[in-house]
Amino acid sequence: MAEPDAKPGQPPADAPTPEDHNALLAVRRAKLDALRADGVDPFPPAFPGVVPTADVRAAHPDLEAGAETESTYRVAGRLTQRRGQGKMAFLDLVDRSGRIQLQARLDVLGDEKMARLLDQLDLGDIIGVDGTAFVTRRGELSLRVDDYAVLAKALRPPPDAHYGLKDTETRFRRRELDLLSSEETRELFVTRAKIVSTVRRFLDERGFVEVETPVLQPLYGGAAARPFTTHFNALDRDFYLRIATELYLKRLIVGGLERVYELGKDFRNEGISYKHNPEFTMVEWYEAYADYEDMMARVEELLPLVAEAANYDGEIDFATQPYRRVGLIDVIQEATGIDVMAHPTGAQLAQAIKDAHIDIPTDDLEWPGLVDDLFSKKVEPTLIQPTFVVDYPKALSPFAKDHRDKPGLVERFEVFANGMEVGNAFTELNDPDEQRARFDAQVRLAEAGDEETTPYDEVFVQALEHGMPPTGGIGIGIDRLVLLMTGHKSIREIVLFPAMRD
RNA sequence: GCCCCUAUAGCUCAACUGGCAGAGCAGCGGACUCUUAAUCCGAAGGUUCUAGGUUCGAUUCCUAGUGGGGGCACCA
Image (tube, rainbow, N blue to C red; front, side, top):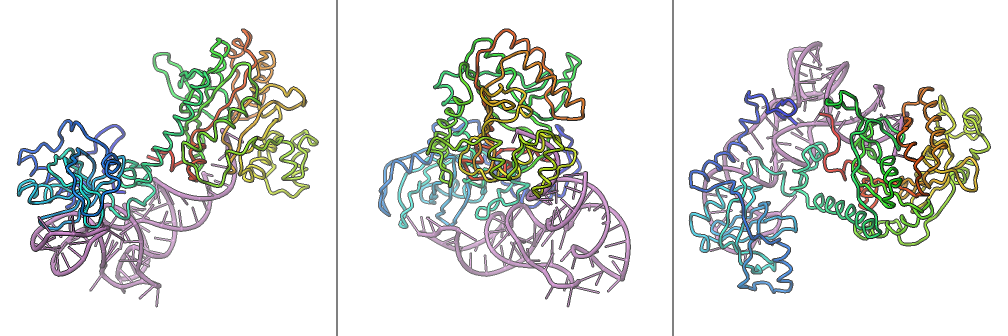
């Protein structure tokens, strides 16, 4: 892409670029000037009373070919195709609800308006139309243009009407072009919105309070990840963009809100891949007097609703319940033959992995890392149908409560589908002394060189000292959920403007 | 951070072993009052991502850089 050089936030340098001389742009500029010379405002402020083109179709479901009506409609949208007939032309108008064919006739519009429509307007222009519904001889419901208005002149050509925009770089950098040329892309992001609103409605209907906690935090926490750092000038202090909402939300549970959720962006300063965007959307909710079993029940209730909202039609069965539940230790042993609890140190487990001839690197890894690797490389990809993997080793989970029956484990589950983690939940740790000990353990890991520990958060511990009821909590990655429900593989496809190098 | 692939007209893509860079669509001029990837005639349209190098000659080969894609590493 040869774009003019521009510093961020500043207009391009004023030197002419090759693009300035592009004949295609010059032609559109000339048409813009011609419109103005004719007294036509190419960018009028409004066009009231527009109805979706889908309404026109809905009102005339069964007209026969050649049928005429008296019904008039005001529609607006982008011109996408033109099939000229000299004194009569067909044009396609696309709005959010779909496409409708327009018929422009010299005998209806008269010389001036007909000429303006065909000569001064281009594909990509946005127009408003007052038209009369009829059905062509070939049977297509269309609007005969009685009058029209230029609503916005397009000074750059749209992507090819038939081939569309294929170049992935342009599709992601210039998502507006992807959207305007692809109904499929428009539908995808409408589906994403439906998924989000379904999650919100689900929680709202069950008495959860939607809250907003700080994105800019003096101390980050609630997950294992490197944060983005920024500087707060007024306080002359570095702040972090949140990596999770967990700790603030639990303080609200301490405060007595009992059921809270937050749906918003988290930021993790990590690599970009098909399943990771550095800023991503997460919903976390916390529920007093509940535990991780209750969270599983919530997930089993939510996923079918989301699948329905997204019109999911893939291989995964969200309806059949309960979902499979399997212990982390058990599922690793199933897949690899290794009982990780029987090899309680990093060295022992590394030896067991080598003895079993499993091809994952074991150098420089402590026990928790090895367990995580075994699971994520050997087990996770096999979890296609919805599965709760339950009861994690304590060392991997600084905010989860000790398992009521199984020593060394905590009450935690992650829910998987299509080989991908979708959510992570605990019976929340509410014993302040134990929480303090967990933080201390994290600090020791950090001192040993681990860059992704959770920093000690005394304010959070003191909040727990005021008493947090038994609480179940969960975080669900909205982007992962959208991938799952839409059948896409790459997070870049389902995020409007994915992170790109500048 | 490492490895592989990739960048050609507004869009989608060609170009053999190194020999004048092509097509479809869009755009431009023209014909056409029921087309729908409209059709027909005509004329245009290029810093082949950038900077070097090899060569009589580079879109093609080499080196470096930049963007993008994939993989690994990292990571949920």
